[in-house]
Length: 466
Image (tube, rainbow, N blue to C red; front, side, top):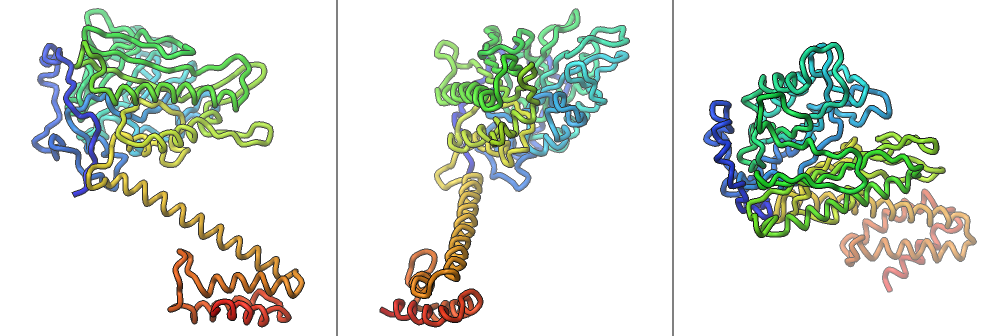
């Protein structure tokens, strides 16, 4: 049977997980007895791959060791303001596409956590977003999600703190929530939302989610947050704002270079047997933002142009997504690249799928995902090859109609000779010569002038039988 095998699947479980296990008692866990197990190896991919890709991977793998597609400012699809909108898909559509990391920016409005991007309200509540996420997990309990929550503007007409309001919203979905500050294995994350917290906790609450409050704002270089007590660290690339008058080609190149640099670090880390020789059970998250924008006197470049691409002085410039897809396709599978946080990821066709496939490598008998990629390449090659061949033949035949008689005989005769003697693959085709001869006769009758037609055909027939 064909299998997809995850590279580096040995158990690197944090040693202090048991110290926090009592926090999850009574809140519901993934029921392995009622689900198809992946302990003995991943299952074969299904047609609905985007909604179920995590279910094909080993339970023992740390979530930080995977490639996880994510979206930046995930809830902005309802906005139509260019510098506010970073997504065109709803949360539900992103989940179906394969997105598993969600960047949620919130604010308090009349004591209710609502979704915002900077100062702009998005007419969406945090409760409705969480409802979409939990509905997905209920339908796909083999999947796990990572949700980062950040306060993006000050409260409006509210008499409780932001942290307290968020805490109350999250407690309402407690059966689906994993609030341990440790890095989970995939088995522990199934059916759960792992919280990344970019806000301070309310008084009296401790150890609620993975703490990323040390997140730096718009650093030019990646930075690392260390949690030695929990044997984990997080390296983050989030340079999003360019203010020095950078042109579109330079900006996209600079951003892509930063993204690929951290992807290479993550890939090298996933190749090593452990992240740290002194701490063999340590976890290293890589969070890599491909998003950016630019507003200054010289240029005003919205997020979509940087992600998808745009024209610069009548020349098309590929966006970060197209360049990222090309790099991932060449890099191949079997390497965890960390969390890749994108704007408009669906714009580059199968970019999300290509990222997901890096979690798999071809086994001894091949893999369904590997064959799928191979056949897609072959199909595109055949279509392009046939189209180019037909176009060239049409150009030459059209050219022959305006030649002098002697030149036309040679050109058309040569084409006829090829058609009569060989198939496209280059093998002799004696068994189909009669068919090709009749085909060429009809073709010449339609395309070639009478004064050239039959002389050329007899000429190529003579060549075909020499």
